Image (tube, rainbow, N blue to C red; front, side, top):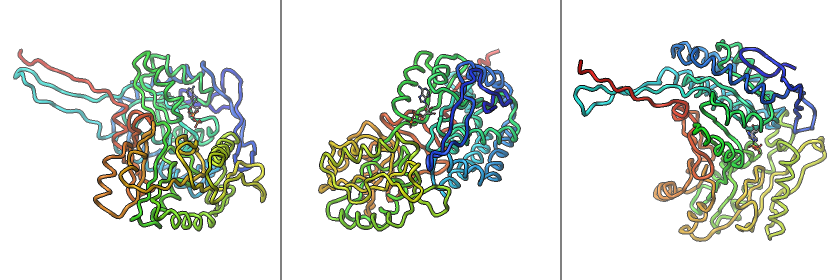
Amino acid sequence: MKNLFINGKWLSSESGETLKVYNPANNELLKELSFGNETDVKKAIDAAYQAFPVWSNMSPNERSKILRKVSDLITENLEDLALTITKETGKPISEARNETLRASENFLWYSEETKRINGEVLSSNIPTKRLIVVNQPIGVVGAITPWNIPLNMIARKLGPALAAGCTVVLKPAESTPLDAIKMFEIFEKAGFPKGVVNLIIGKPEKVGEEFINNRKVRKITFTGSTRVGKYLMEGASKQVKNISLELGGHAPFIVFEDADLDQAVDSLLLTKFGNNGQMCISANRIYVQEAVVESFSAKLIERLEKMKVGNGAEEDTKIGPLINESALNKVLSHIEDAKDKGAKVLYGGERLVGGGLEEGFFCKPTILVEVNSKMKVAHEETFGPVAPIISFKNEEDIIDIANNSDYGLAAYFFTKSTKKSFEVAEKLQYGIIGVNDGWPIQIHTPFAGHKESGIGVEGGTFAVKEFLTTKLITMNIEN
Ligand code: ADP
């Protein structure tokens, strides 16, 4: 088992420990991998440190060609990569193909961005001085990615880091390392100089600790839970280390009575049931104005009834399993908690077994009504296919209710009024606002959590800046 990629070579872990990877659709063992420890991660950081002058001094055109090659190779291997995503996450193959395409598009975008990292010449108040501002790559980056979007998350972090001229050590999530291995096989073929990209499949605590304490790491970029994000941020403070965090969310989804209900339902299917609700931008609280609650719920049930829940590898599957048993248990416990506190199950509400699903972690898509703010679904991230519907009367109160969260990642609302569109969008305290739009993300758009949802920006040009430092060169030209 040689699945750690360090300094241009495939290696086994020093510890001899292993990690088993399972398919959540049937609990089948997919692979047993070598599992790294602190010694391996140190080696990877050293390799990235040594490669930094090589990569950061390479011409933007040369860097661009390599990143473009990565993009092309992802497209060439689309089916294989997509199937790997489906096997280790359970997500439907159609969603996995989309994710793979987005990963390719991201590398294409960043291959172009690497040519546009420029500085500025400032005017000087002192006639004998000239002022030049340069943007330089920050140094070695420690990247930690989650399991829910395993391939594209690598592209979203490594694309801009590499475009900026940084070298990288990546630690993917334990449930989804197989995509990362495939991605690094592509990196190997694309022709990066050795040490520029390094892969550590290893113990999260050990890797995190080394990223925090090793002075050669100058930037940590993390996507995952708010709990781990806070731990890393606290750790990074010891060396005033630069850090970007994309953390949890608790997105409100507001349907005003003047909305196009079909559009709202279509959008909810994307943001609530896409990836089985396992996204930080997934809708969590569905606020529907009293007059349209019944018709909205009826339309939603009609659509859900047509969506096949099953193994993601089957082409017609629309909803796959949850990532593992504890994720399933959490979702079921949120449903039970809501029922105990008075919610009614309008649709679903249970684990799905039978028809070959018994070994997997399937939850029937669920609609809850008569939900109130005391229930866990109303303030904790459920990370599953549960739509809690909360009806509201007054438009004046709904913004405050929607903003009443420690999170601030995404918010959605639906109305036909242009006036309301602007007024509500400007008042919502969230980093991404979808107005009549359930999928508010494109390759080049900023993705930035407010409040406890994160710090820093991902996406497009915004992301490249996260991997650059600003330097002033002031020149006295008197003599
Ligand atoms: P989730 O609960 O959704 O799995 P986590 O925050 O636990 O979210 O996981 C996201 C990523 O963070 C994964 O790659 C995981 O291995 C990593 N991780 C978990 N704990 C730590 C830690 N203490 N230090 C560094 N990375 C960690």
